[in-house]
Image (cartoon, rainbow, N blue to C red; front, side, top):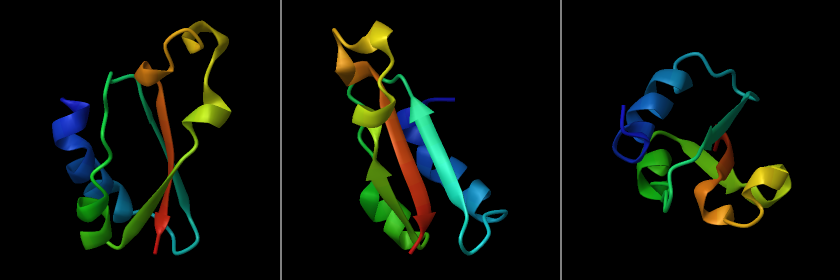
Length: 74
């Protein structure tokens, strides 16, 4: 799995079991990861970047390799 390439397909599969008010916490350590907001919107999902709230001490020197998102239905 390549998280950059495959994250929308993963969200598509997760949406099948996501309740109307459910939440997906999506985290990865891919340097330079870019969320595909258009792909999420096409699935009826939205994402909020919460990386700054979940950054472990080990990653403080290089926060670009920690990504954490709250994904919900629109």
